[in-house]
Image 1 (cartoon, rainbow, N blue to C red):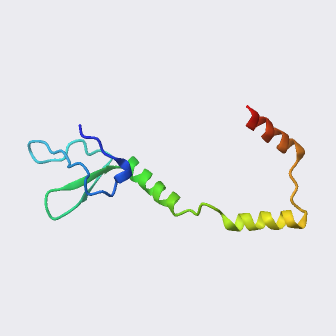
Image 2: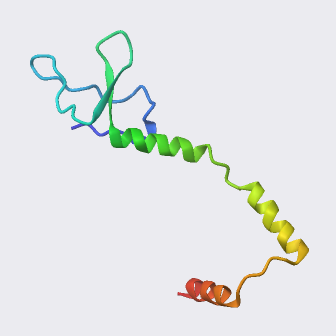
Length: 98
């Protein structure tokens, strides 16, 4: 069985679908078939792989820094209103020391 690189899901170098002796797709439960060209080539992507690709796409669209949250916290610190309970600080120190 040929391996498929899920990181290259949009790559034209995907595996060809397997067909039985009658030209029908094998093992197509839970698999979406997408035609690549007018020829007989097609890409089969499982529902799980499609969900992973969707999540990766959404994650790449998320900014690394949530600037609105940073600005709000910065304002609280500058105004003296930002307070962290001592127990939370102690628990964080203990977690990092483990």
